[in-house]
Length: 277
Ligand SMILES: [Ca+2]
Ligand SMILES: [Ca+2]
Ligand SMILES: [Ca+2]
Ligand SMILES: [Ca+2]
Image (cartoon, rainbow, N blue to C red; front, top):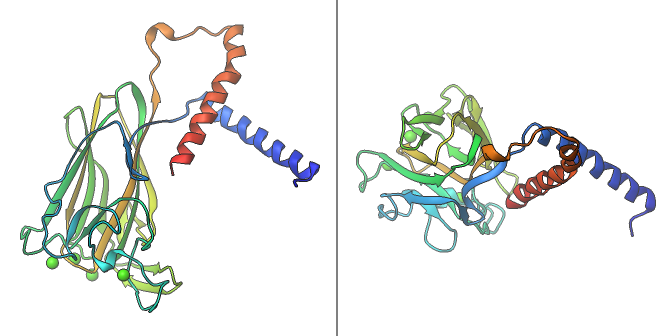
């Protein structure tokens, strides 16, 4: 049973947190606009196109969405170090991982001699501005300067612009920790704007200027080794809903009375986003 003092402090914390969120939300609080690969689900995903799905004969070559247990996948993408015989020293996803993710491994292979590949997503994003794109990305391996991945975007079929460029930091090392606790230090990790990628998923986010009906996301890879792996999921577009011109209210006493209701709605949206993860 929770003591009355604990309950009071819990309530105070929630009230303070709520008040803080209200202050933040009063200046704009993000809504979920669209997503894919979030617990296996998608929202406002108009199209997904990947000519490289099931295009490579070797299990150790891939550029596509995987769901562990549904089809073979390269062992360098899976971290089995915490289970007998405890000798795995390379991997990203846990063998019990229940949700789909996109993986890339040795794109340069006999089925794809030019060594590059691209997949695209199209999301409906109309009615929002202050857009932001978030993706959880992980990588492990000793990459080279010739290895490159990128996420680009375009609004309503316009000019393609870089969202994230992933390049090897050829003068740095990264320490990767496996589920067993084993650590491995490898040269030349991938990085985004100097932030090193890890074999655990990290969230990268960037704002997108402008408004549009559709957002195209392009994931490009050019990479050539089996001991260089990358995975990502939780592609989320956030934004602020544009108010219809006719419904923009003038400040009034009534408006002030309605503020708590607005704050409550914002709080619920915040909770919805947290529940997605
Ligand atoms: Ca492994
Ligand atoms: Ca290297
Ligand atoms: Ca390479
Ligand atoms: Ca190769």
